Length: 170
Image (cartoon, rainbow, N blue to C red; front, side, top):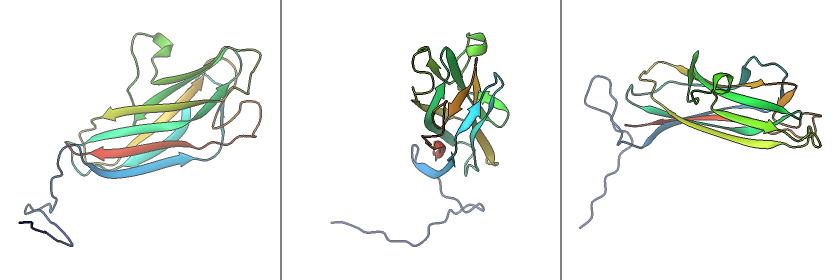
């Protein structure tokens, strides 16, 4: 015997009217993107891509996925850091300046500007809030000029930089 349950809307019996989701289920997904190239020639971190999410449950985790391409002058590096608001999250430790969540390096003087490399960064965060929360990927160039979203030496290639946030039920 099989049963079928059909509903147009399910509401919780609590005053909030919310229904708890089974652990591991995706509650919501939001995405931010930058479609243009970003040039960075400073060791100071600058914004790459930003996105806000308002978690439905304070127990939820947020899966952050960032992707794009980058390129730097020879003997240079492009370092990435991830922030929740003004708090750095997900970086390694013990590396001094190099405590980062991702990096693109270019040690080849023969191909400065042509060696575009992809990056993919993931982190599972526990913000413990139902308030709007902003996540941003930032980047710095160690020495020389670096470009995010294309080639360092021109504008022939334009690849979007994206950040995707997924609220995961716990």
